[in-house]
Length: 152
Image (cartoon, rainbow, N blue to C red; front, side, top):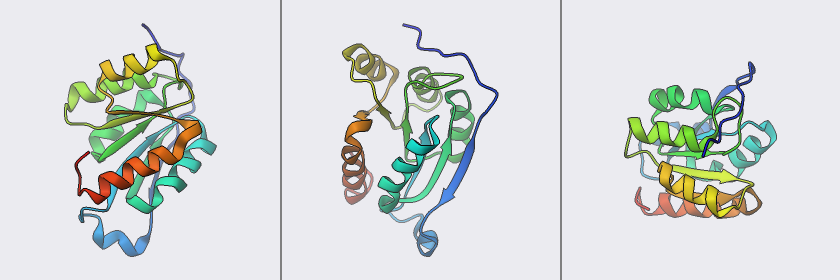
């Protein structure tokens, strides 16, 4: 199943370091580094606000085509990946990340609740699938990860 979408010349890459007082704690078990991959700036902002309490650093990009380079540069604890994006869709991007780093943890964050997409995400190597209508579920999942000191 080809989920690719034509590429766009507009790519956005944003790095947000949250809670400056926590900068010294970035290596502590509760301070995760997250990479949000979402083409909608408003949705990125909502996700960023929801996960801010468990993240020491959040990196962002708006295109699946640029995520592999950013992943390799930043090595986040989790990638929060949309499915439908310009350039490269989230399923293909997840597959590429997992091919270069089998230990990568990608959680799909999407509007689409179709069983075939869930299956494709799992086959690509995603470790989670959260609907945007249930973003609190994402926050709880990451909080649980943080509380366990890094294990799902």
